[in-house]
Structure formats: C-alpha cells, structure tokens
Image (cartoon, rainbow, N blue to C red; front, side, top):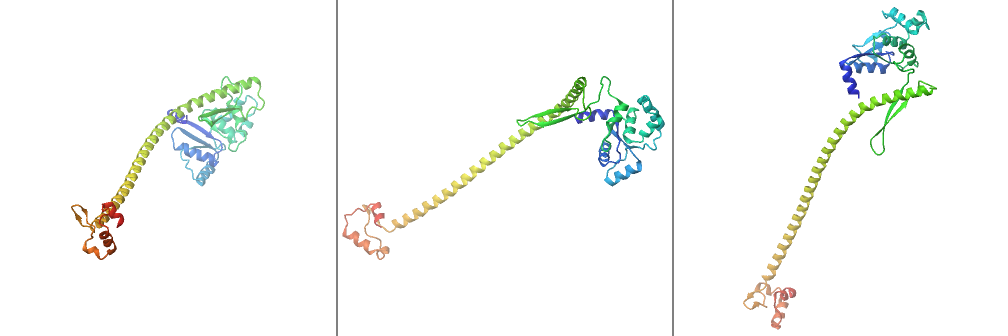
Length: 305
C-alpha cells in the first residue's frame, strides 16, 4: 500500500505541515522525508530554534521549509482568510492572536493551499479543533470521524483485519452520525485492504518460492545424509571384512603349523611325528605306537593334539 502511495506522490509531489517544528520525532520524520523527492516538510516555529534542535538531535533538515508565525510575510492575508472562514465568529485581532499558535497557523497553510496536509498533536492536545473550524468536512459529510485499522493473526493462519471506528472524536453520536461513521470507516478499510491485498499476494509469491528452495535444499541434505550413511556402512563392513580376513589368515597359519608336525604318506597321516618334534612330545609318540589301530583322521589328530 505504501509503495503505491509513494508512486502517486512521486508523480505529484506534495507539501506537509508539521506544527511542532522542534520536536525530535518531527525532525526525524522530516529528515527521512527529505531523503526522498515526493514530500516536502514545512516546519512551524522559530527558524533558529528548529535548526538548533535538529543539530542537537543529529538530523539533517536541509531543504525543509520553515515558517515562523511571528515573521510570516503573508500574515495579513492569512488573517483576512481566517476571518472569512470563521464567518463573523472571530474578529481580525482574535484571528491574528490565534494564528501565532502553531496548530492554527499550520491549518491555515492548508486552508490557503500553501500546504497539502498537516500532521500535529505531538504537543498540542487540540490538533483537531482548528481543522474542524477552518478546513471543515469533505462534501457530503456532516461530521469528522476517525478510525484505527488493526491487523492480528489467526491461530489457524491468515490475518484478521479490524476497523475500530471513531474512538476519540464524537462522544455521543446520533443514529445518523453512527451510520455516517460506519460508512466512512468501511470506505477507509476497503482502501487499505485493497492495497494490503496486493502486498499479501507479493509476499505469498516470495514465500512460495522460498518454500520450494527450502524443500530442494532439504532433499539435497537428505541425499547427502544417505550417502554418508552408506559410506559409513561400507567403511564398517570393510573393517569387519579386514578383521575376518586377518582371523582367517591367522587360522590358516595355525593349521599349517599343526599339519607341518605330521608326515604325510599314501595311506594317510603317519602316527609318528617328525624328529624335530619327537623330543618335545614323547607322550604322544608312545601313545600312537601302542595303539596303531586308532582313528588317525585329520579331525582325530587335531583333537588329540
């Protein structure tokens, strides 16, 4: 919504009056607006005080227009216009006295077409009264009303948009005034929601693309994890195979050593050991010589040995 408004303002730049020119919040807003080219701030107050306040706060307000009610060169014309708008309810002297106040002075800048909008209320508690007296309502409306637009998320997703109609201006509105307040609030809500919907569509597109990228990354990560698992399994299998191979080699060496102790002949194993081992095992030699008919198969030989 703001992007759309900025595009409109860039095509037709406007001027906005800030009635409290020395307020740090106003100075910050002015500095930010001056960084663009679509809104020119008009600061109301003594120029020396405004520039000193801006310097102390560290804000660059170069390019802002500063109007001091005490020295305003078109004050006589402004007084005359205000007397006309008040329709005899105030004298020229009364109007001149009121115009030394920033809120009335700023409102008259709008009424005379010097400025396009006004922002006040940071320090003045009667920011609305001058507008009601001098600018009036738009054609077709009998009262001025306000509304707050709130956006809150649903627990199940999405957002709830609420319009809080006229929370501060009309204390005891009549039935007709309530109808007008509700109608104007609905119009404001439609304008905001239509602009917000465009933003939501864009955000949803970005979110969808981000989700697809996240899913792709997750798939790649899952693939890498699977590959890593296979590598670890293969590594473990290789280690087990190496251990098994080493064990088999050890057993083969043992078998070779055992078999080397016996002399092989055509009808089977000799019951008599080789000379190199005779001295080491005399008991076995005597046992075999005493019982030549015993089983001399390979398994029997290993178990007896």
